[in-house]
Length: 575
Image (cartoon, rainbow, N blue to C red; front, side, top):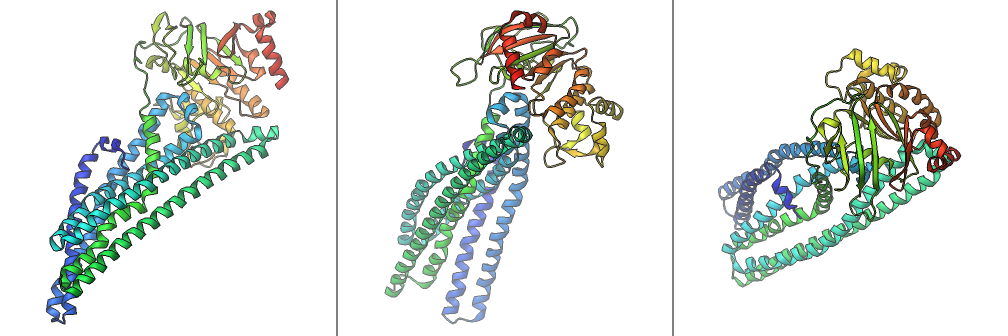
């Protein structure tokens, strides 16, 4: 149940040692509590003086109070560590996703990434708080109680020792069934998250196409599937809880019956018999507590596994081969016979891609959906590494890939859905510029066409946006990304991955007026399937099934009557 990778977390072994000591002392307090409670009851039974009852009662009260104070202490000691660890895990996850880039988000699904970073880390925090303390409790307390009972009455100790593995075995059998159900439930949750986020993002487009009802039904079907998986998991949980309670209660009853017979036969005194009877429920309590939270820890373990899988994703090496430089009118980028194959894919997504770019140009990348436009943009951005064959070069210097620190300082990536942080509008705009002045930010806002919207905000540029804050429309999000480009004059390379694909025609037309000025004096890669952008390009790459089937100026391609003309005709009909 405990993930071995938890032990590798910084500071975990130290805190487990501290908690182990606290749990040990707590187990001793439980034994003292049971012993002196039994003494007080036996003295009452024997009608002894109140003085003989007072001292055992006081000791019992102290042990009882100590036991519960130690529970509080365990949580108070461990919670700051858990909170810090889960917070750092969230930061590392976001940093890792940022390094891996949009290719990782595309692979995992936007909804899944958001769920993982928010609710997933919360589940990991719950998992850490529950599983470590309860595992230690289950590993220490029953065995100390068993050793003490062994000195009182070896027959009952042997019985309790033999029944414990039987209960554990039964828990394992039900646990495996629960694990399978919980895995399917978590997969359903991820699928629901992705469906919901994708549908929400494309809602305006779906409405225009008259498909909103169909996709609403699709979200309903996915959520209904998730509900059924959840109910199925709960049935297993309730069954396992009932079975565990039944077996432990039956075991305690067996101990009580045999102790009763031995009392009648005079084989055992009342004090040890009563002490054993009081300790028997305490013997099973750690495993019952663990079972009660088992399914919550299953969800946390699944979330932890998902997070660690992302954190353990291999990163590209050799990221500092390219020395610092600034893209200028004399700079060049060469891709020669590049191939790229996604993991577990049968066919390469890009094949024999060759293109040479010099200076400041506007390069359009067009093709049907799934032709490889986004993959090429991700390859140019260094978010993906090409296969071993092929050549990549900047200013004539051969590179293993474009995930170069110096190259990434030169470009700005604008996807379909720019990421907005939970921060002020000004901080979001100044994301790439550490020391932007208010004047520079206001100028960028004006050039990006955001001034009218900002004027309507009560706090202006200090308005909080992003996760859990003020909602932002798709057009406004793109303008914020555009303002980032206007704010940083040092980034002379712009990568646009279908930035207007999910916008309606009116919003796109208004946004286009503000996007076109930023193209000036920049190298622009613009992947799109919208026809009206092509006429703004200096050079066009036509991609089909991962291959660049044609390239040239729009005028040159128009005279060839090839794939470009055919695609323009299809795109025109679609629009």
